[in-house]
Every structure is written in structure tokens, then in C-alpha cells.
Length: 67
Image (cartoon, rainbow, N blue to C red; front, side, top):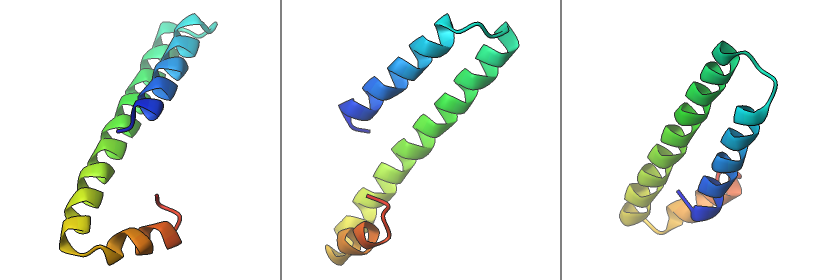
């Protein structure tokens, strides 16, 4: 995951920490953020592997709006 995305996730986490939410709401929010982080990381790995197979994959993913 790019540094920019990690920075955005950290800002979101900080905002949730300081928000007036119950501990349960904060905990659930953090769980979702971690899931998104893992999914994004997994997509990056998938993208890398697909790109190794064919450079045309990047163009296809860009056309689909996924990158």
C-alpha cells in the first residue's frame, strides 16, 4: 500500500479516536479500517502478480477504474 494511503488511514483512525463515539463504535470502526487495509494490501499483491503475467493487465485495471 502506498504511503499516501497509509497516511489517510492513520488520519481516519486519529479522527475516530478523538470522536465522541462509544468504545464499541470505535472498536467496530477500527476493525473495518483494518479489513480495508488488508483488502487493499491484498489487491496490491494481486495486481503485482497479474502484472507479471502480462503488462496488458495494468491497462485493463485502469480502464475498469481499479487503479
